[in-house]
Image 1 (tube, one colour):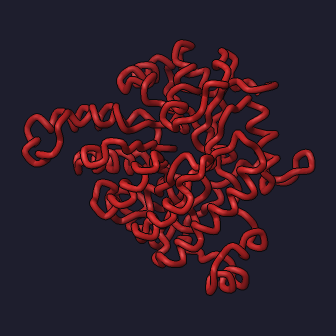
Image 2: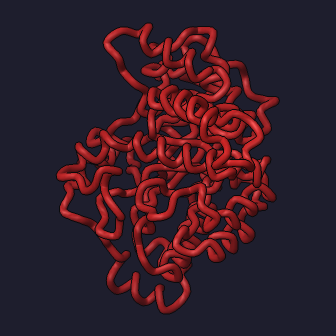
Image 3: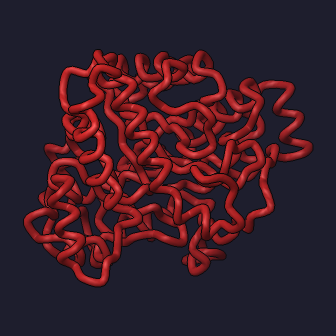
Length: 368
């Protein structure tokens, strides 16, 4: 596709840098450690290769590789006509790591590297900050350091390698900082196959990456309930949360169950002033990848109607991962009347982008 189609992509995974490209950004003693031994690895016995990059993109294409921002510009932004793409990083090197000082150093260096190499490569890139959830004070320090940057559009929180639910007051300093800087939380699955995880699934450990990956929506169900019922959105009325790579079809059940049980148990949450589903509608957004694929298209349309997708669902590609959804794949599953909001307007409003110059999405969006 030539030119911009107005497409906004809420999840692009820029490639981790080679050690020699960014080790100088680390403070000591971590500069010497990483330079000599590489990043700390906390991998379990799962085959994590199946959760990585598309194999057809490996190697060199047109003289460029996945380590080059220009590769993403040519094979994603230009090919599909992106107006904006959010760089969400890869949190496998920080999720579940038990050392907060080490993790904070890695996050800061990684953020600086992304700003220098990736944001300068194309004005359509924005970024989500990596922060160390192991220590909220250090996380806030990173938000204060880089949050005011105009190309920073979100703050990343890994959703599956944590031991404390997101509604807990432990995280409230992070939410206060995000609200103050008008930055939404970008909640994304972490590398769940790490030994520091409480569990690979909400039911316990998984035997394979396949088993773990099928259970990702369960984490999002629990985190949504925690955020709403712990009163996070009453405490921080300006906080916005986007749930990425968790699917969509689980949401109706959670909304209905919270509202139904609120009628009998609301005395346990006296700080809630509205029905739980109303907080979700006002503060939480979901993304399309991985969009559900039922045998009959009308079943997905019913799910979209149940969650009011024209208000809360945004496009995400997950490029360049194996389960990447190109825009045409998503476009084939939704009504034409939903395209403008799903591919552009919802994300434009949620991320507070300067979208006045973006063209309207056309019906052939994503045909690369």
